[in-house]
Length: 441
Figure 1 (cartoon, rainbow, N blue to C red):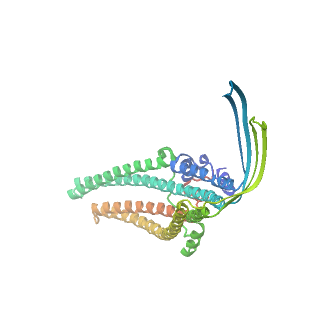
Figure 2: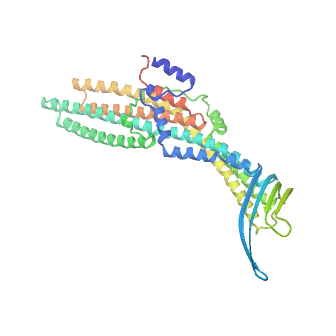
Figure 3: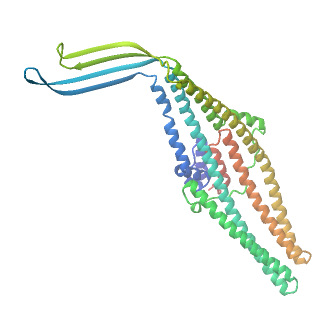
């Protein structure tokens, strides 16, 4: 039933609920981070704010309607042949409709607002991918810390057994005092390594908890011991570079920033051009005088205004905007180059990572065979205690390096997907499926 449920969610493209995924994994950690990570909350708020630029910019091109009204009571006293007192009420009402016909500044503001709103969505999508990578990094670091603690504990146990064996052999005259002391020294070193691993595990736990807002020690995290290894598709670094230039979200964001700088330059130049608007107004006033007590006035017309001189402010603003546009252009070039370098690194690290994993898998197999041979040789009297201890250390180191290579491969694979803007929920769930228990039942 669980297998069927998982398949249905997968085909529908819906994230499988955490409870159905045996409690926890990278996807559920990512979901927790989206709720609790403060940096992502900042990105969400920025997106909600910046998405309003389109509405704000468009408003400058649409008609505006203004109304004003006043009501006053006047107590008027004057003296001619005698004191006179006259009280009267005055009031006014004005309605004015304005429609821009030509206003370069408002047009540039509208285009800039359009780009800013689109860019807000790009930046927010990039922030989501950045969060996924941050979660993956602390997630893999925590799993590696768990593996390290487990391996160091197993190593200490094995060395303790070897020390006991050396002591028994020494009592029987089959080993030397040096064998016993070396075993004790190795055991103490293993104890120190175990304490270091426990400290590292605690630090990794805190870093993980900071991102997801929960204690990972309470989660039912699964080990990843056999990730699916596959070369990037296509296995052509130039094809990935081309895809990155077109699809990378950071490059798109800085392209938008360059376009925004263009429109800001147009806004500055607008000070050299006239502004033309169509207006219509109706005014009503009530003020008793010699001629009448009420007055109505309707007006329709075209109004033009233009600044002739403002102390060089428009020229200075234009020069400043031009320099900022150049800055945006060079920044875009720098970002493109950085992303291309990062893409090359991620691609090559995936390719080399697969080779490293295969090499460490073979190293673990060889170390296990060597350790069995050393133990058999020790019993036969042709191998020393030191040989066994060295073989145990080699096996521990190989297993630890293998897990480092596995987690590094997975992280770089996610990084490459993020660089081409394709790191989504399905890619995250793929890693969870590598660590899930059997769901056949």
